[in-house]
Length: 265
Image (cartoon, rainbow, N blue to C red; front, side):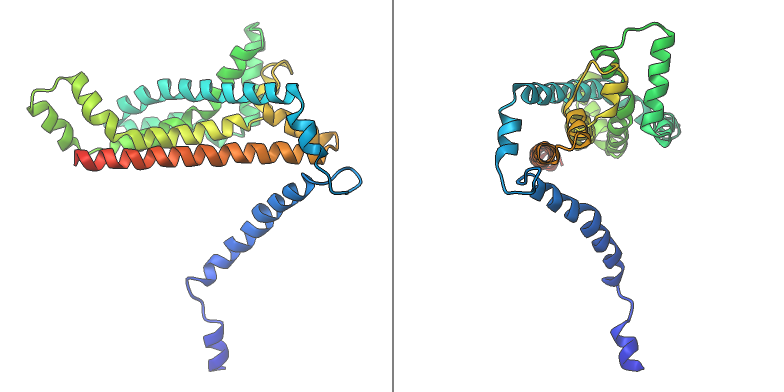
């Protein structure tokens, strides 16, 4: 009995087993299936035609380019709106409570939020198109920019700002030379959290444009719905590659920002 109890003793390692099992079933296995389907045709024969269909299609490249463009514009708009909001809230005593106003919509399913946004545009007789799609993107992903920025700016040691002011720096110089460099990690986190899901979204563009705007996520969904699993798998792998490259670039910038922070210290 003692040997059995020692063999099945609960340790920290044991609690990681459910997560490992979940990771294998819902992350690793689907990725393997996508990778396998990318090299199979409709008759389950090995082929490279799926690559030719995707990379040889001008329309697929245009859709991919439009998705990246929408992702960049959405990220820039979220940053231009989110940084001033996060900066102002970080300097307010009730800032943490007010941040909840931006987070509360996230408790509602994004599809419901998007449908409600579409209903408002239709009630106001606003023509649906690229402008409404960008509005919906910013509306849905702005909290992902504000939260890391607010956390980072709020965590900046106020003594650095006070030291800069004591040395004669005005407000603009204090912000550009102290606050902004120390908040780069929050900017990078916000960009990562907004850009990556934006380029892979599929429902917002369709709903807020009445099918006029077709992004890369929409084309992946359409490929699987039409039974083109090979082409859809290729598109999924391309999107995965963009996600990995984006993460690598952001991690590199994050290391550079840490170096800047250490130099200020």
